[in-house]
Length: 70
Image 1: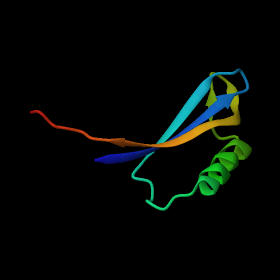
Image 2: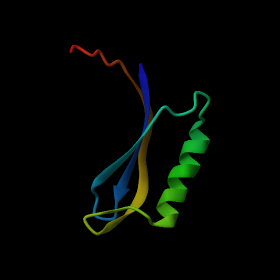
Image 3: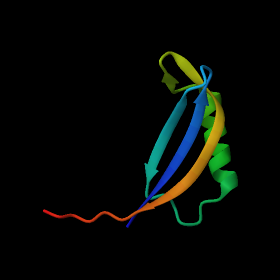
């Protein structure tokens, strides 16, 4: 089983941008994620088609089960 933290942002153009982090710590809180996402927006490090991230859209943890066949 793999856990993925998906942080979804909206750009100034209205497009969605997802930043995925594998194996987040098990006791991660909503406040920690929100603060991290706001910090990413404030530092202006990611751009999508020339547009900066402007707001937090959603954050979620996804549990994935991967079954290798070959």
